[in-house]
Image 1 (cartoon, one colour):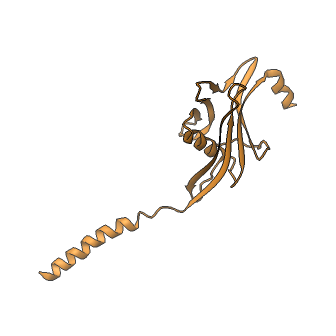
Image 2: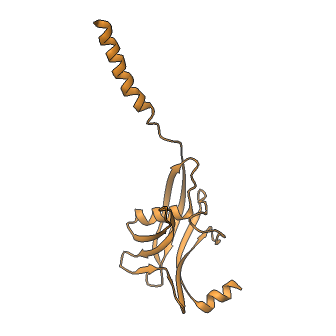
Image 3: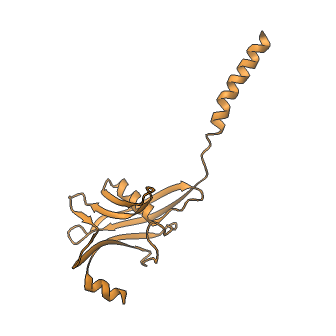
Length: 155
């Protein structure tokens, strides 16, 4: 009977230890950047802060991850464009604390959109695929351009 109690105790301990051992978290990677979000003239800087994002090892921390984290930490409302799988492609709208909405709009005369720079340069890839490098300075700016200005820049 004593052996059965000892075996039962060992089994109970094993049942507790095995799930706890499997709860080890996956290795993480993180990056810290300075993020600025700039609106139009009436709200020049919506936020400027240091942000750290952490993901599982093997996952890419992107510029978009950094901007979304900064907006969320400052409790600034924003909307995103998602694909069918729920992956975020970009920011479509940011609302300042004063209530001004900066929304992407593609019109015949004027186009409104968000652009970003990393360390003063505009990357050749979208924010959702551009990796965020440790210590980078990210600036996300709401831009209004006429159709003519956009055509000139394309040339």
